[in-house]
Amino acid sequence: MQESKELALVTDMSTTIIFCEDVNDPEGPVCLPDGSWVITEMGRGIITHISADGKTRRKVAHTGRPNGLALDTNGDLWVAESKFPSLLRMDLSGAVTSLIKDCADLSFLWPNDICFGPDGAIYMTDSGVFLDDFEHIKPPKTAYDVSIDGRVFKIEPFNGECQVLDRGLRFANGIALAPGGKTLFVSETLTGNIYSYTLDGSEFHNGRQYFGNVMIKPPVQHRQVAGPDGMAFDVDGNLYVAVLAQGDITVLSPDGSIKTRYDIDGTFPTNVAFDRDVRNRILITEGSTNRLLMMELPSEGMPLYY
Image (cartoon, rainbow, N blue to C red; front, side, top):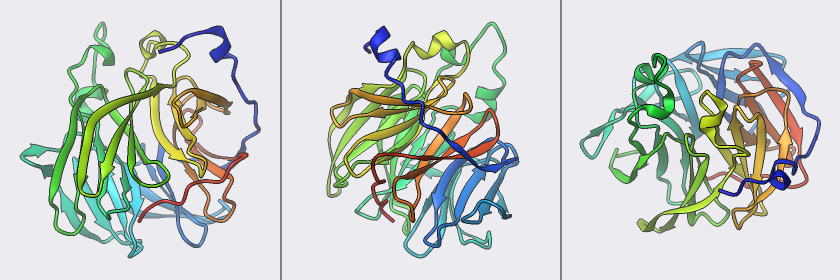
């Protein structure tokens, strides 16, 4: 990891606006075709549907502690549920129609984030530790001392077939596919690293490759959980990464170098997602202020796979 005063100062002070307040530990933003949003509120254990103007909301379902979300071509939501480790499929009324709890004889520990690939498969990170074990760490032990086996899974959504693509990550977290759909990216929170994986149809080549690091100083120096969380690509192949504790959205260029850092109003951004209607606008879930923020960017978001 490069650390320098120069990198620390590559910061864009773009203004964010408050889109919605009083969301409890928000995550998993998904923009629906009508411009409205669905998020998870981990602190309340619910999935929430928010109107396109941010003014009205309704509870879709209570699942325990939902984390990541993805939308399929039928308009159903897929939910990475972390408290009762599982991958759920539900419609927007909250009715659950599918539930997966394990993969290749491995029980899920902490399903975290998910995305669809161009092959129709779901790609999911599992942080690699039970939520209760991680949240109840007592001093002098810290999150950085805990044994963690972060995993990356490929799951066929309609028959449940599953592959373990990688394991041994130090808290696998955000996941995103680059433009073209042939490279998968995963964030490793406790190191600050972003890794890439080459996909070729149903095959998986070359294993884990180091891509870049988003930290100004190592995560452990923050004296709390710090590092990259959710991510999204723009059409130019730049990767926007929400960085916990550092309190910014760090943008990595296609070569993995730091392009810029966007300061935000808050210290714990958990995820990012591009708007469908205003393609250069990004929604940020922010946990320290329990708000959803909107920011306009110089590039448009990459359309997601469903």
